[in-house]
Amino acid sequence: MSTRSEAGATARTPRVRPDRSARLRHLGGSPLQRTSLALLVLFVLVALLGPWITPQDPTFGRLGDTLLGPGAEHWLGTDQGGHDTFSALVAGTRTSLAGPLAVVLFSTLLGTAVGLFTAWRGGWIDTAVGRFLDVLFAFPALLLAILAVALFGKGMTAPVLAMAVAYMPYTARLVRGLAVQEKTRPYIAAYQVQGHSALYVTVRRMLPNIAPTLLAQATVNFGYALLDLAALSFLGLGVQPPTPDWGAMINQGQAAVLQGQPLSAIAPAVAVVLVVVAFNIVGEDLGDRLAGRDS
Image (cartoon, rainbow, N blue to C red; front, side, top):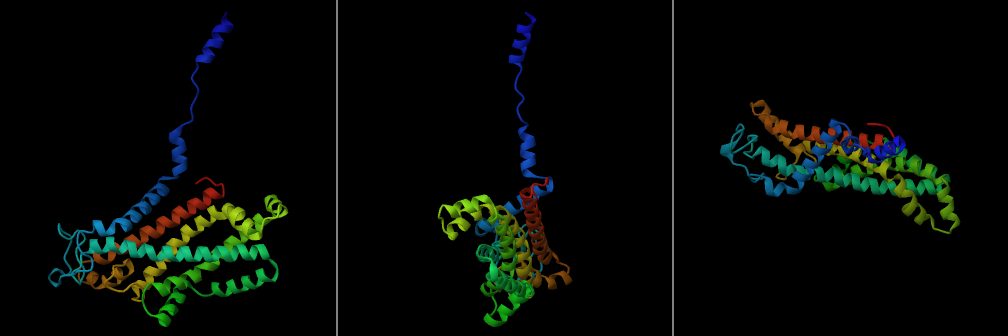
């Protein structure tokens, strides 16, 4: 009798369900990582919705409104040209993020192609391409961008292409190392035995296995590319007025700092720092998760 009652009690015992909140906390990472991700989402939304949320025309300045302090009409004040700082900051988000995005896309595509090709072919081709990449490593991205501006003129196109070439070796080396490891795995030999081409094996089978690590590296590269392009615009060699850009705003706000209105320079500088730090934190978190380490 007691056995039956114990069995009934056991049957009525509710199952212990996994703690979903704990799983979500682990998925989202630490508070710092969640905050960084939220900041990136916010900046992306601002870049996409910029033309609809700027309270004033960021390219229109009134000489009578130069160097105004924060107020109801100008939330962050105005610069020495009478432009609304908040509107310029919002509009400059799209320009400041589009350039690094192009650098990362071009460098990742080119570096991935070079890395996969050299890893698959090996031999003297791998050695020759490796020496060429060593030469590119010797040139800083900002220096190549300045040389491109000297040759092709100011703007965004030439510096973006030059920086993409400068960032390409980092991606190529990473992809080459990962592809060499993948090449020794049994599934690669199995696809070769089945008669699949090298292009099919590398692009359709090998690349998806290294893509997560490649994504983590691209995330980190985005922050560095943003910093380099902002520095170029600060020097007056990147985005040209009247197009809003964070680096150019910092340069134009130097005079305002000396006259007691520092927000026109501080606001874009803080935006650059926040985006760069957030991308680095998110990128390192992705790398840690892919490496199997607890964040």
